[in-house]
Length: 220
Image 1 (cartoon, rainbow, N blue to C red):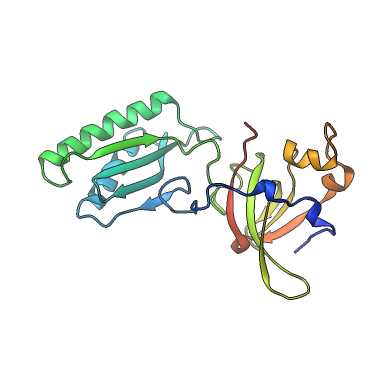
Image 2: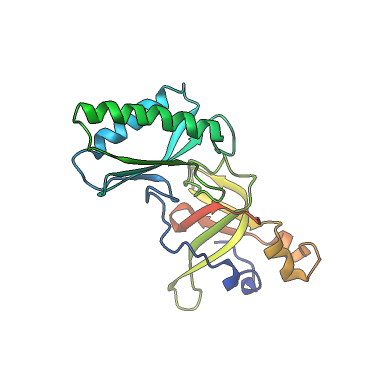
């Protein structure tokens, strides 16, 4: 792992997230599929996938979650733009089409009655899936939580920061990160000042498996 000295200058509790429950594959902010184990949820997922296909590859399911109280939460993404953010029209069109499919399935008794449906976008600070999303979001500022080995003890320690992706290698399964040019990093060089030379040259190398959470970072 490439890691410059005095890293503590760049990692502080300012990065600590409120979303302590967020994890990749949670069916919500972390994306992926999370089924409650009801008798109808697999059929509901198949219907959602059918609806996505009806949009000709423009829309995809970022996250899908069923709850035992007959609720479905879907987060869709637009596959034809780099940000992945769907428009309000996309969300409405998907909702109408999926609702119609669920109503038909309810009449056929292949899903539960009175299902509550919630459709939304992945969110401004969506999770970046490793490694498949790295190229897609390589130009964005990213919040990264990772595990590193403590030099003296050899024990593992969790660290985080707001980085930019310098490069990644699919064969070695490694990423090289630099500090992102965002306010939270610039302030460490002094209020109103740009990143210092030391900050601009700082690098960190991580393997894919050491990355606990990577998501888009927004200063808004």
